[in-house]
Length: 224
Image (cartoon, rainbow, N blue to C red):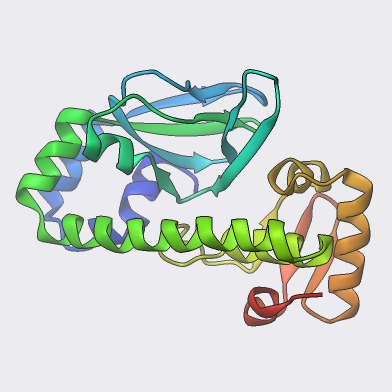
């Protein structure tokens, strides 16, 4: 993603909107640049925006009163999140933090509601996205309970290539081993070992600060 225009244009729900409506979205959405560690949104705050990632990587999770951190999902460029809180009109039950310098789009509640009321394609996309998100969370729970480190890394990477949640055109994903560790709850060293194992299976290629996916289906099915 290079710009807010690109994020909106490549979002599946925008494909059937008229050009005039797209112009309105560009004007009403807010763009913010955040440093690594910057707070995208806070747990408990009113859900006044639907949030999209123009560029960068965001970790969505929560921290218990005892300080234990739990990661729900990672959101890469092209992804939108927070629709559940918007639809239920409740305070956010999670926080979101930029894992690297990121550019974030915020769609105001009024704009989100306007799309709900006027766009069939937007409503259809939200239904599909909520279903995909549920499947993603179930998959994350399954991998944490049943799979070893290699399987957890494989599932995490495959989720970042979900074509509905994160539209992208390249098999190359810019992500560091430290970032993967934060998303999977594994140490950087263990992530490195898992990536080397997945590379030996021919599922990906490890690069400096990135991975190139060779078999997305293989990553989704890997249970080692």
